Image (cartoon, rainbow, N blue to C red; front, side):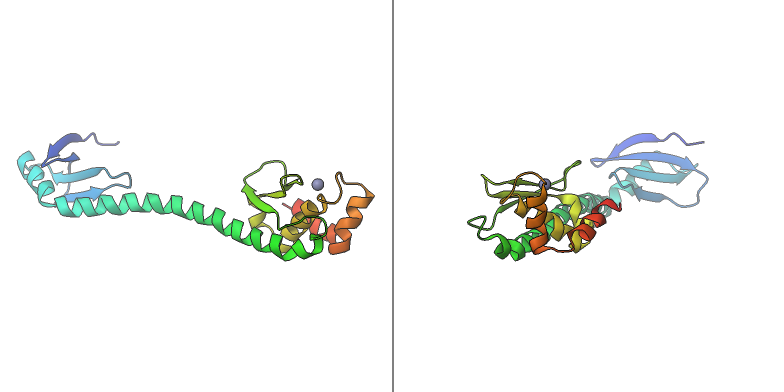
Length: 183
Ligand SMILES: [Zn+2]
């Protein structure tokens, strides 16, 4: 059975006081930054308040660490997307020479988390959009999608001319495409 604590404030610090069968005062800062103090049954409330107040600096440091940990998660996600963009950019640049007669400059790259497409080619905007999820696939599969989108600068649709354009650069394109279907 969960014990019901008593919400208190001392010296500007909000905390929850629990009376327990413990011998010492146990102070805890939770992941969400809330503060809890467990004290022995006979401990006077003013003593609990005084103890928490005396630990103000320690509590503030612990709360800052918790807040920083949350920020770190967000940063990690951002880096993942940036890493993917850098990886994709390298492949788009590397294959540009095969298509420099089809498109006048290295296309702009857009990275999006898409659900139904690996890539999108916008010939008029000279832009290729790649699915963020490709970062989790083998480089051979990523290269296939990049070449596939490049080929759309030459041919719309997926007919024989299109397949010939892809095969010109990647003769093993079928094996590469198969890697995308295996997950
Ligand atoms: Zn296509």
